[in-house]
Length: 159
Image (cartoon, rainbow, N blue to C red; front, top):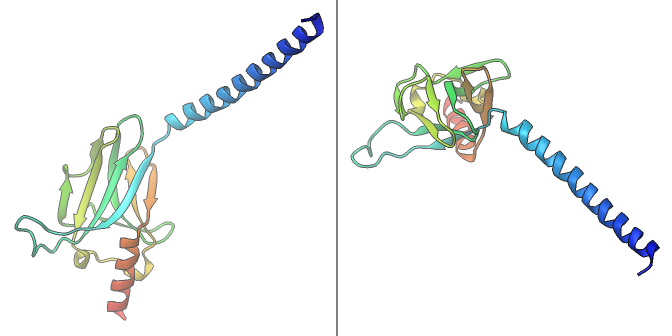
């Protein structure tokens, strides 16, 4: 091999390594930024009684899953009626699993608040999403087909 072909091969290898390093650097920065953020998944679901609770009036749950890499304290859970108005479930009678609010959620653990839909005094026609608010003020919303069905069902009952 002559000197020019060795120089060309060295330049190509250097360019490939440089581009790979730059891409990995950007991925690392993105991961570090995302790692420090509060990430929750809020899922409204139907609830069904089992084990002697078949006649239970509790039929709606909001599950909050901590996807963060650090503990998060959930302070409030409920329905978001508009951009600024919320209907909290904190005062509603129901089941809290694993305990009452405020609840410290370790990484990859969840909290569920289950209530009776008939005890919710919210105007269902105005409900937009379910929400969870952390102690540090982060508000996360979630929507599901179950919530859509409840909004449709209880909006029709009022009319």
